[in-house]
Amino acid sequence: MLDPEELFNQKIEQEIRIEPKDWMPEDYRRMLIRQMSQHAHSEIVGMLPEGNWITRAPSLRRKATLIAKVQDEAGHGLYLYSATETLGITREETIEQLHAGKAKYSSIFNYPTLTWADIGAIGWLVDGAAIMNQVPLCRASYGPYARAMIRICKEESFHQRQGFEILLTLSRGSEAQKHMCQDAINRWWWPSLMMFGPNDDASPNSQRSMQWNIKRFTNDELRQKFVDVCVDQVKTLEMQLPDPEIKWNEETGHYDFGEINWEEFYEVLKGNGPCNKERLEARKQAHDQGAWVREAAAVHAAKSNYSTNTTTHGFQTA
Ligand code: FAQ
Image 1 (tube, rainbow, N blue to C red):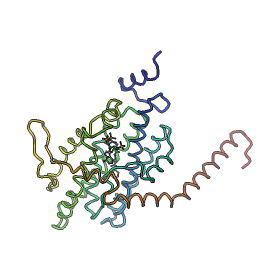
Image 2 (tube, rainbow, N blue to C red; image 1 turned 135 degrees about the horizontal axis):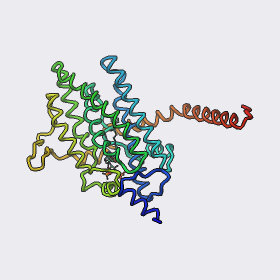
Image 3 (cartoon, helix red, strand yellow; image 1 turned 90 degrees about the vertical axis):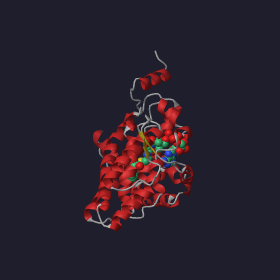
Image 4 (spheres, rainbow, N blue to C red; image 1 turned 45 degrees about the horizontal axis):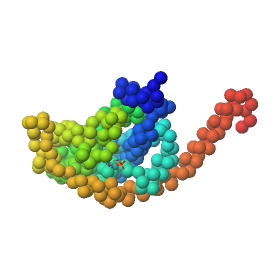
């Protein structure tokens, strides 16, 4: 009989999913908890920059779509917190790590949304980068994560299109609207490239993660695919990407692009981005203000369980 570690390795090799009750190495469990909880936090914190524009959306249709998008992000966070709980950590613990400033969430959500065009740029670029990164995660070796990603990717793909459509409308509008569109692309381009994480030679987790079939592509591979796609899409908008070094490279079959400002990236990770403090405060405040809802839900659940149990046993007393 195989020992549990051999069985685990065999499953990874044969692309058989690892499920919550299966034996797994502690480092694998920790790697997943780290990535999945960060991912969950990103979805929830990611509601804030866009939520900022719900009251100011330029039409009823735009408002309804934006509300639906922000709600989708909340749903993604909930699937991911639930999937993380299957690894033996409670949702309360992961959320506590976020509120204590110990857990990371995507750097991108520490930038402000200054104009309506930013909502388009987030959809096009941020959701676009998220999809590029997340579609391969539908094949991640851990079952609950991979399955959660399938629905998330479908929704993100709709978000990406609605963002692009916002920018397309602005790009065909007045001079002021065209300017707004270009300005938003200029501000969101580089932070979107940073979403893929540090260059491969500075990415401490990639190698292990790829050996375990959690990540399927490296940070640089995904970033390159994203650049290639965006260079084409920006032509439809008749806008520019803010990088004079973007150039087709016949040899590699990809677009070369300029150097990312990694100093800025690490500053944002340290908590020094334009909106880090504001985002964390908003999350903590929302959590505190929601305490009564959690309490009420817990009491309701306890009552429902009690009444189900007592009915089953035939002596309902409540
Ligand atoms: N921001 O060794 P690596 C979304 C950290 S969801 C902050 O390369 P890894 C939906 C990294 O955690 C967006 N931290 O790490 C939406 C690690 O720190 P640690 C989120 C970052 O894990 C759209 C350290 O740097 N998506 O947008 C970032 O192998 C619109 C070294 O890095 C996911 O989370 C960053 N950008 O690769 C919502 C997808 N990059 O933990 C609302 C799942 C790296 O060792 C509106 N995650 N770090 O202290 C992943 O695919 C991976 O975790 C990466 C990073 C690729 C993000």
